[in-house]
Length: 247
Image (cartoon, rainbow, N blue to C red; front, side, top):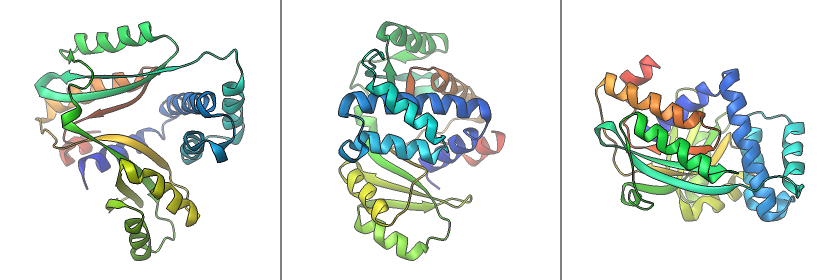
């Protein structure tokens, strides 16, 4: 499996824990709220909302929670969220790209900077790491009773650049950013609901560290993920089998 597929698998398993699931739900609710404010409450005419709802369903979020999040987005008194990205390096040259949504940008900047500073990292300027990452569509689809050969042909036709089946029975599909919409449409045509569908920033190359150094990096990444304002964090640390065994 590729590094990003391993990382997606780890995050999915961690998300099964109640504490993590609550945090995931909070971020999904925020994304639904932002999508409604940006493009209205009708998923048919709002692709971002349709995707946010699909991701919420993929995480088994109750229907009532989804409907409340949509209503929250329609409420004019609900705070608006500002999206911002942060780029920088952690120790041993590990690059990280942090995506945030916040109703208090000053708090977000302070929290992100504090994590970088406390753990020996350095915050760079926007765009400073763009040469290290490509924006890609990443889909995680439960295999279920899907015919693998037929499914691969269908998804390749829709723009799949890479298809992997992990040991837990999930397809990991990667597309270009431009083919993200066509892959979503193809899965809808096939009546297949992905567990998640996201635009991610995938590194051109990963960096391997010894186990102790890598574990320290993962702890910092988890601190970023635990911040309520952080929606996504991407990195170029190689997730080795040894690291997985320790997690």
